[in-house]
Length: 518
Image (cartoon, rainbow, N blue to C red; front, side, top):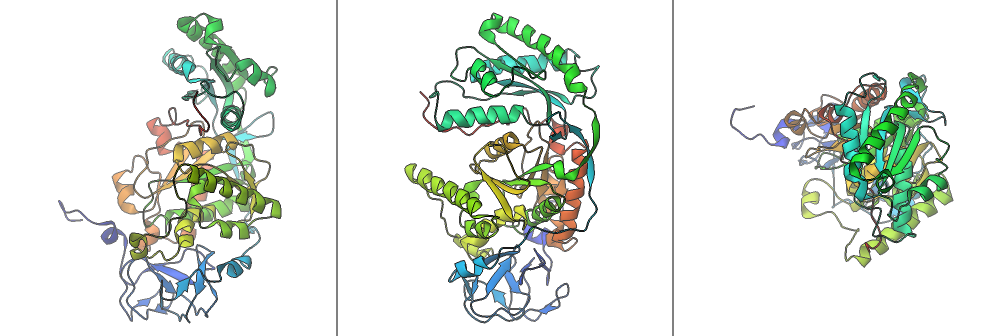
């Protein structure tokens, strides 16, 4: 690099006559830089017929008129003209005409693997679930108790209370800005209660203390009764009003923590199968290369985890819009199809009520960058889910009942979506980014993956793994997928992510708020 000169991402990442294959079954590859007519892409044995701009598609085998074009291992459209090996594939020969028929033939069984079963060192809870961290949570039923919860957690850390309990990763305040001024029933009320309970039940918590004010809509007594928490020794709850005010509530909270410490510390790390891992998938601050490098690589790692019997959660419903038919083609049953269609219909109605649109076609900038159809654009995000069958669709923060690939409905706002995934049971989060991300998600560690090397080098203290080496030709999607999978197992066994080392995760609890504030 030349000192004092701004080097573009294109200069840093892309080399002449280079291309990347995103999935073994694809019939196109993606140019990693401008490729001159007649140049040979040695990795594919392809002689390019026309000059290809960087980021655009090149046919790797002949495609007949009406045949599907495959990228990310998925159908992105059908050929509208004969396409030869080495041809540029874009608007002039690719469209969505007849797409439904092509998609209907694209369903495939879950990925199979002859790899031996893998394990990690986790915390097996009494209910059979397995955590990768051992925190104590100080949760709140209402925003009015947020300060007291934070003060309890800070006092516990400051007092040295945890010094004798190295088995415990820390005390985490889980606060939010709702819990009152809302209807005592209905969609918004149900979502908040589900999120609070699901988070408390996440196996990364060895014990939980719930703090309320006393007069809020989310009543502690009803909450404890409805979720059967009264007989759980790893759960404590009280209100500030019953304790006698702020100072006495902090004292009460510290006393309760002292009873929870030995309970949380009693569970040691043991060998656990990779099938017990639950991975939430997120992408944020994406760029033009997210769908070419980091997202497909994460999708490959997701397939590896599913092949081990593990679970991955795809979310961010507005960001799958336009690619839903491809997910439907991967659905395990008609019931899964109906549930996904129901959530998309809800979002159509929700967006309409607020004067927004979900169906945005690729912009001129997208087209210039090589994206041809809305499906291809959406699949840049969906690519991180891999190619497994879709086995379940759940509402936001709803408990999972199936293993494998599942879809949890959520907004596209990353902290809100990740909060729901953790409440649904995600014990880890994998987060791809092209522009850079500063995010953590206690109690579940967040692994960050860059789509380009430039942002990795600029934010190396925040980003765990660089996937830009795919675009440079130094690694394949499968190489990076294998590397991500191995890193996930290391993190599950206790290796700290960059966000954990920086102390992120105590302020990123963002439940989805629906309904009127009264």
